[in-house]
Amino acid sequence: MPSSAKQILAVDLGAESGRLIAGAWSGESISLDVVHRFPNRPVRVLERLYWDVLDLHREILQGLRIAAGRLTGIASVGVDTWGVDFGLVGEHGTLLGHPRHYRDPHTENILAEVDAKLPLDRIYAATGIQFMRFNSLFQLAAMRRDGNPLLGQAKNLLFMPDLFHYFLSGEMANELTNASTSQMLDPKTRHWRSEIVRELGIPDGMLGKLVPPGTVLGPLRASVAQETGLGSIPVVAPATHDTAAAVAAVPVDPARAASGKWAYISSGTWSLLGLETRTPRLDGAARAANATNEGGVDGTIRLLKNIMGLWIVQECRRAWEREGQALDYQTLTHLAAQAPAGGPLVDPDHASFMLPEHMPGALQAYCSRTAQEVPEGPGPILRCALESLAFKYRHVLEQLEALAGTRAEVIHVVGGGCQNRLLNQLTADACGRPVIAGPVEATAAGNILTQALGLRLIGSLDDARAVVRRSFEISVHEPAGATLAEARYAFFKTLVGR
Image 1 (cartoon, rainbow, N blue to C red):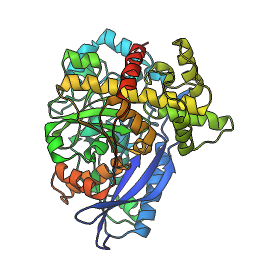
Image 2 (cartoon, rainbow, N blue to C red):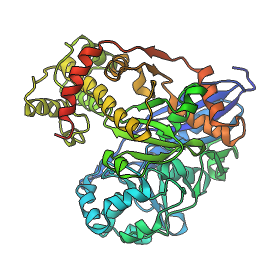
Image 3 (spheres, rainbow, N blue to C red):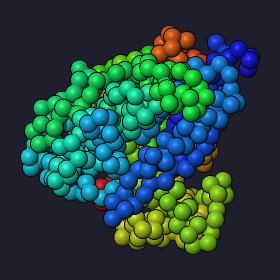
Image 4 (tube, one colour):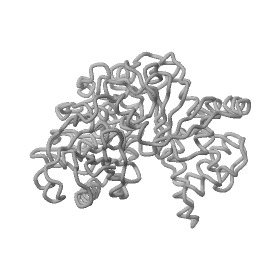
């Protein structure tokens, strides 16, 4: 990469870890360099689970200091994170407490409580977001139910990337792709549905200015610019929802992108499987499927569903590590590949896998409860998890295709999970269509390229995807074993919802 390349900094925060990644832009392609990697360590206090945003901010600043000392030509910085969680800011810009973690149990049973006050069907018709107990609207409703005093003190609600942008720049705004996951935004007008919020007794004055991805928020705060040595570089809001950023970096070819005959899986702790559309689906069929309509780059809609994803694998690994078996992911995948095919299956989205005390035991209990052979040992247990995930992908994909009236010819898998070649092949086999895997760092690439859109270094979403195709390697997995897959899928469908 020439020394004159511009460096765009992406802060990419995930549920397990965060990274500051530099994207060197040559004018034709980008190359990525992980400048700083750090853990994301939620904190449990008084039976409540919080994000440690001050520790994360400290790590972001450390990453910026390292970047300033190592790189030249730094053009901007922007943050992406998961969705739904938020911080509240009060008078004089004061952070009110620590943001709650979406896995915190305070939202248990909140869906039924909200439905009794305001029918969920009406909320869906207004927002088009799938119902999950931790959506921002329901977190706020739980705070209201519990008499949380912070609601009355809040002047601004900032989703997680908005909060870190505020720490860096002093500017408060709600970027659209993340705001769209909150269940408080109209996917047609891209304005707040304030009446929904008010009817649940939640103050709506804290809902702020909405900005599209690529918005230049302003320069670094003077204190941050001095502390990091970066000077007054701009803070640019990228596609701040990690899935929106990842989808922007899917290397789909222009013809297929225009036809809509492709699907994506952003694969990580969660698997986000969807189609890219131009109009939301808010009808009864979409509601019955619990499909979600989240905002994407360039006015697109991400018609998708959340799937539990590699959370199950991660939690199994943690459980075995606590028991003295420290196995890395490569070893675990190898053990799963060596395990016999055609074993037991589970529904990855069953409630028992949300936050179990012991994930391997939860999988075994599910198999026993559904009268299947109980897997023993890491290999068979993970084979069960991965085969089940592949069939869940097919089940969800068929639902979304029915809603959109199209059939995806290929499935693009991006994100960290695309490195799992076994899962890629199982997905191709289960779904009966090619799986195109890569790039691994799709979220960071999408973050960087939407910043590049804001800086006018590139002109469109198609341009961004062309850059991805020029910049990263991909692999293709062709389907096999169709007869076996059909029989297994028929059985899997009997498990869904049990």
